[in-house]
Length: 473
Image 1 (cartoon, rainbow, N blue to C red):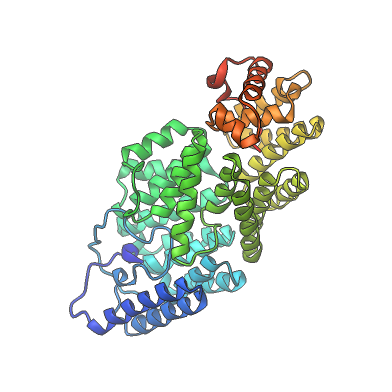
Image 2: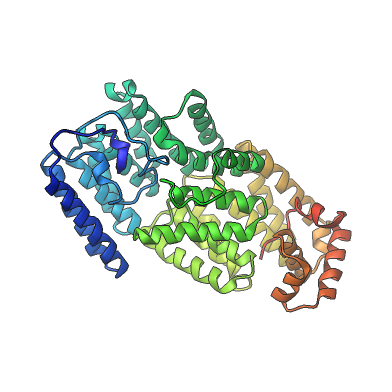
């Protein structure tokens, strides 16, 4: 995993070791391209086991063997501290491979636990792989306990690199628990005191997502522009996480086509690594929703259904709940209310409130669109309670506005489903002629619907529509 182990180099590199790892990389690429993922994984694990057994491996030699967020430095700089790589690194990477493939979750948890209970967990890269597996498996209490143990090790308090690694893990735990404000506060503290260079790209990605979740879309966009992240990300070490974060920024800003493309690009890069599990960053369900919002219903359905299959195989409540919600959101009219209700029930039992709040909001919208206004308002109220408890001011405003517009005599109640669909596409940035083509209507009909929307909602044109909580379809 590149320089998470914080090495520099060691004297007397054995060419045979380097050749073995290069051969393993080539085998992984070839076998993955053929869809023979299990064999590709075994080739990687055999090579890692061989070199770590000799105690001659350094962390940068293990780059590009197993995908993980934070696996490579964003700027290509090398570390200056050398530490030995323990044999437990192979087990930690094996657990990550299982997580990446969304298979054998119980075994992956057990392997990660054993690694984190060993002395090998004192090495940064080994700890990083193993603890992320626990986070992806929704074992947040175990992950917190592992953080507490390594924090007591002298090297973890003496090395700034390790202190930042530990804090980044805690950021990820906060995010997984739906505590976006806490995650954002930790990252801001890291930035203010001077973050270790290896984590810059990852920290920007996670900070941008936290800002979006907290309603600070302008701040998220400014952060990414400050780091020149609105161009090509092809050579960035954490391009997957940055693509997902940029997609979230685009979507929050109403640039749905750009958001969809970024989420799909993240998925394409992960496929090149044979990573099928999207629980790490949620790229697939977000791509599905954006595809539906931009008129690509077929693509949306394929993505959402695939995500549900993979999420159920991995077996976490959070992953399954989000995937189920995505299916409900993209399959309007096909048991969408039942699917979203089931998703809310799953997420209510998970260790996160953010996703539950968002699904309750979407369910409230769908209920109201189907004229079940009282049931919809109950869902809005449940989401509002979560938003207020978490101090999410942007969500509080959105939910209060939704409740007002769907209340008796509210403007949204007076609009037909077709008018709401037109408003949704207009809000997504579609021109009138594009909406007409998508919905197989005339331009005059689109103009009629939009005029009616503006009048019923008391707004003036598309600029006013941007801030209205219109249902998505």
